[in-house]
Structures are given as C-alpha cells and as structure tokens.
Image (cartoon, rainbow, N blue to C red; front, side, top):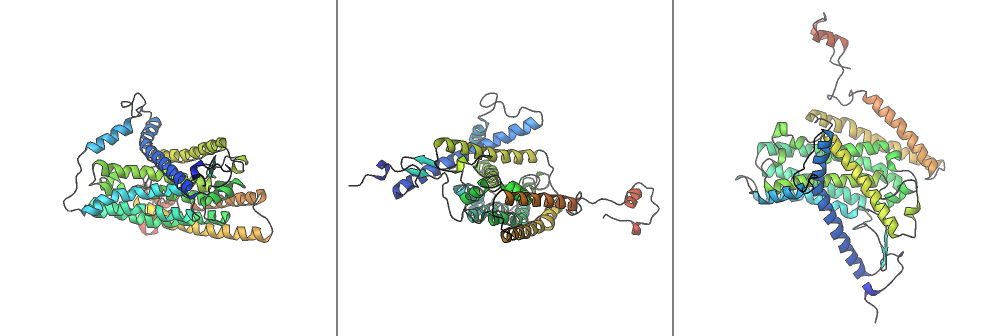
Length: 426
C-alpha cells in the first residue's frame, strides 16, 4: 500500500507532484495571503493618517490602543458595524448593495497571481509562493483589475442621486482614458520578457536590469495611470468633495461606505505590488543572483519576501505622499493628460522599444549587460526629449499656458495693442 501523500518524503527542491498535497498547500497559501491582505488594507488606513500627520506636523490617532493608536482601525470597524444602514427609497436595491463588494473583490483576486517570494523547500516538495502561477497571469491581472470600476459606476447609477451619478460618469470617463494607457505601458514589459507569466517577468529582470531602468517611460506612464485607476489624488475627481459632496458613495453609510474605502486601499496595495513585480524585479534581491538559483532555502524565502514587501511598501508610501502633496486636477486637465499625452506617448514608446529590440537582435546583441546599457541610454534620451517637449505644460493643455508679453502688459493696463492682436499663448 502506498503511503498517504502527506506522509511521503520527496526531494525538497523538486516540484510538488501529488494532487492532494498541491490542493492542501494551495488552500494554506490562499488563507494566509488573503488574511494578511485584508489586515494590511485595514492597517493602511492608520498608516495614511499617521503619515499625513507626520507631514503636517501633527500626531495623528493616539487615543485608541495606546499612544500609537494601533487599535484605531479596529475602533473604526466596530463603529461602522454598529451604524445604521440607510438605503435611498428610489435606489436600485440589488445593484446598490452589490456595488461596494464589486469594487473590492477584483483588487483582492489579482493578488492570486503575484509571486511574493522565492520557492519554499518542504519535505513534500518545492512550494511556489504564489497562490496560482497562471501561464497568463499578466493578462489575468489586466482583465480582472479593470472590473473594479464597475463597482463605482454601479454605485453612482444605483443611488439615484445626481452627485453620485456624476461621480459614476466621471469614473467611467476616467477609466476609458487611463485604462488604455495603463495597458499599453505594459506591452514593452512583455516584449522584453517574451512571456506573460509573472514568474518569468521576475526571472528576466533578475538576469539583467530592472525594468524601471530598461523601460523608464513605461514605468512613469504605468505609475500615473495607476493613480488614476485607484481614484487617488490628483485623480480623485469621481469623489471630489468640493464639487460632488462625496461622489459615487454619497448615499452610502455604515459598512457599505467603509467598504469603498477598504477597496481604495486594497487597490493601492495591489497596484504597488504589481509595479514592484513588473518594474522592480518583484522578490528579486538587487546586486545578487544567489536568490534565484537552486538550491532554495528557507533563508532565501524569508529574505526575498522581505525584499518584496519593502518594494511594495515603498510604492504605498509614494501613493500616500502624493495625496498630501499634489492638488487635484481640473476635469479638463485630467482628460487632456490622458488623451493628448499618455496614450500617444505610450503608443510611440511601444514602437520605439519594439524597433530597438529588433535592431539589437539583428546585430547579434543578446539580452545581457550590453543589452541593458543600450536600453538604459535610450530611456535617458527619451526622458530628456519627453520633458523638453512638455516644456512647463504646453502639451498638457489647457493645464497651463504661458502668456505672451503683450498679454501680460494688457493685464497690467500698460498695453496699447487692441484686443484682437493679443496672443493667448504659445
């Protein structure tokens, strides 16, 4: 009689082959990853309040859970559970109740295909530290992440409130404007990796240079589009308090209201982990290659996990930092940036990278140090050209226009030129 799969001892460096063992480890990873994810999304509310207080010279929450206020998220959760649920009389009740969950679930599902550490050797075989290592993991992320906006749109429409409806419309237009740029900015990553598997993208960066240096323009476009997709400042037009009261969640209260905020922070965590994987090498430890080669050990797993969490935490901090530093765009500025700058630049960058890779392949330069140096130099030139062309907002019109001297003199009351001859800008 063969032993039960959990009693069999195999090579720790070999992949798990037993079906029962695979299912058990998958369930364990599922429970651990999503428990940590939910706790992190809740604690991120405290982190934002603490960081904003630090930036503004305040103390932040300091009453619940000691001087550090560590139990403030728990207190907020209990308060929201105890609050009364209010539902508008003319709202579409099924869609009204479905919208908060639909806004949160896609951000949580995306985490299932993001590798967060190097494989862990066990007595039952090597365990890959990713919930589901799909061969199309990259496409899975783009497809599922784009569903989150439907929760916002449904919340705006189902509330039967004009402010909520305007917030939903803004979210739809914003999604259309920036989802295209977000998707196109990832195409150079696929071209460079030659694969759409997340683990292969990490492996490609570990053997050369991180994509933040190889594909700098794509990284900047992806980062700005991620801010817009997460409805974060300066792209939080769907919930602009000064214009739309609270935007798409004006009519929500109690836990439904709280779930929208949890969804926002969940999207921040997901976008940060996605950027760390695509452009900062994921769990790859910089300036070393031993963490990517067998034999895998528990020490490698712990170090790579810490490296991945550090990179993700860095992007989370940048998200919070930008919120308390940059003012909100006007709506015409938001649309102009998306359609007149980001989409054309992303399309042109795809052509540039594809042509460069073809030329390098034709002249016999294989992926390696020289390959990365050439791409780095090309990106530096592209960035210089890009920012020189923008020239203080002339392309991101009508965000900013420099007035001619005659216009300035006219405004100062010293111009003798008739109004028909004055210029409005270059």
